[in-house]
Image (cartoon, rainbow, N blue to C red; front, side, top):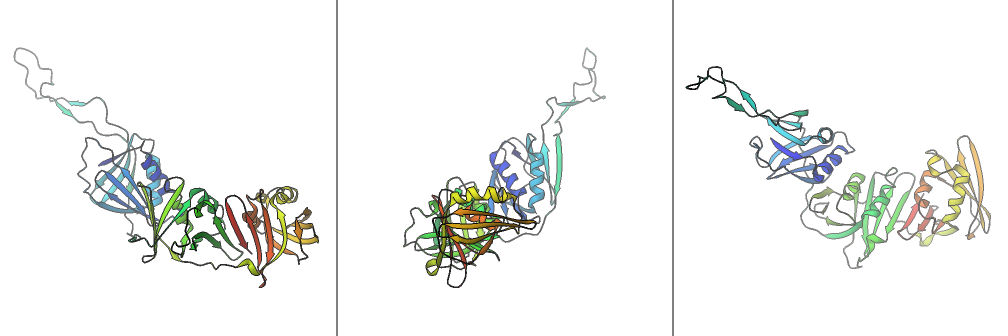
Length: 389
């Protein structure tokens, strides 16, 4: 048996992350080490958790004992036991049990021997040669784990490039996660950018903090990572996350000593659109949207998935916005800094929200490229963003 202290932040963190995997069939590799247990998810996350150091028998686990369990089930078992004093891993043959371990009774169990002879010169008490038994442990909950198929972990050897990401920038990327399943991470001439897309649109974002200190001579790279990998990277430390890229093995690595991510990456998917050939339609301050949106539809959150905003030219300083909902339309005219005559165009409300969600202190440029692509550009103190729809 091995025991974990339920007050351990590492254990609680591991239980939370393991139970929160998106794929219900996600496996987790469990390795019993010398004083530590390593939990590794197939998606690349590795967490080490210390074993409680105490006087108890650990002989049922060999050093480097290795198991594969269903991550969600393991996480559920750990979270159910988390209010116990300790969590026990017990092994019976090839089967592992997890239990909420309360404590041993304070009073030892005394077993009387009725065949004990009387003490010379006195009467027998029946306990002169009594056996004192160790009390049995008390378990509040127990789960039996079933082994699942093993998986091959991502391999990381030598770093061919290193870059940094601010966790606040990754949070900004997560605001797009409802619309996209993966992210291209690219660096060209020292500038790191992030690209996401689907059939509706593509978004290119350059974060100011993640580009501080980059040199034009730093190696260029471009690869694609899954949304789940991006989520994992946000768990590494605090503030700035340093990520190493192994081009040979198509993998990335990041670690803060306790939590490590070694994840597979894939070829980049999203092309860069050069805006220098585009023609500006109009420029509007973000505050104009802040004032117009509540009058049109209360908020972006109040719109439906396929609701649209349509824009039309009214005059050199005015643009009309129409919210098109399946039960009708509402029109609002806004003042803009500059507008050239343009053909009406539409954009889905949920996609416009990506663009102007936090740029009320800046401006938005709407334009069109020569090949007919609609483009919106915005920037604030944190990022520059280009949306193609």
